[in-house]
Image 1: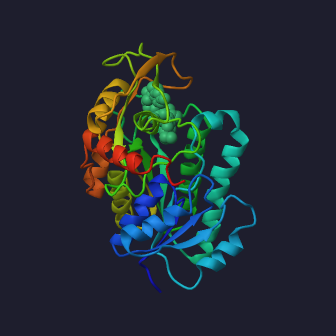
Image 2: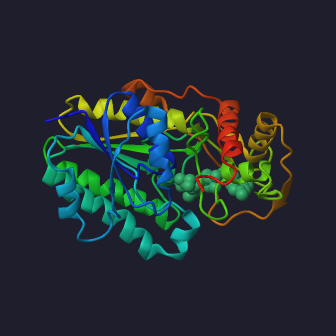
Length: 344
Ligand code: UD1
């Protein structure tokens, strides 16, 4: 049995690929389960290039109802330290338009994964949750005991997944769940070999700005400048994807210590907010490019400000962010400049 093996669902994606590199560098054997629905097979080559070892790949949509036996068979033959579960859909607007699909995919994937974990006798899961579970009910900064209230089906799918995992832990002694509530992941690996490559028009701020800087889009639409914030634009807690990936390793390490099972929940953020215009200025300085902006109306569902209280992760996991906004912009730009068309 090799308890240094880790299953990484969604491991070819933006966040997953960074976690894969760090896991391999830390000496884990990594098995990625991904269907490349929002990623590229080229990512696997890049992970190998960066870490020197090619992760095993199980190409599979985990939400497919009858995938459990096949995936369990593909994973059989060794022991697993744990699962890091990232696979799922994540576009807020799309989730409002297609709620059924979001619940089917995001909940179905977790339910199948739990059946697979039962078959392969793995008791530790680190789940990719989101700060979106807090909605807009809490004055910043919000800690893990903040009021819960998602505002869209994507956010509810994260919350429901947390509930499914909590119920599962309650029913299965020794089953350990760590929910990581991400704030806004940005940036890229310092090599520029892996990074965020959204399909179509980016929904999120950093990839949109990066595509303006590289000349793929004309100007950033700033969604509202009349919020009650420092300059009227939305304020978020941006976190470098390398810090976020390190947070997963810290969470896995914690899960592997014997806590007798149960659920723990951590915010992963910097604890500091930046406005849209502050990000634009920082990115312009880091890239040396002009970022034209156009103020347009508010985006439906947006909130004024959300910032993490990440003290719990520092206290319990011994983790805190190391990289500032300038580093996020430098690394995000480095990735975009070297890969103007992403992995294409
Ligand atoms: C959203 C989701 C979050 C999800 C994250 C990553 C909510 C409330 N937020 O975060 O759950 O995990 O995406 O997928 O459900 N902005 C612009 N112009 C743009 C894009 C964004 O002005 O073209 C502004 C937004 O209004 C916001 C800030 O930039 O103030 C950040 O937006 P974005 O990057 O989309 O992240 P969130 O909405 O915070």
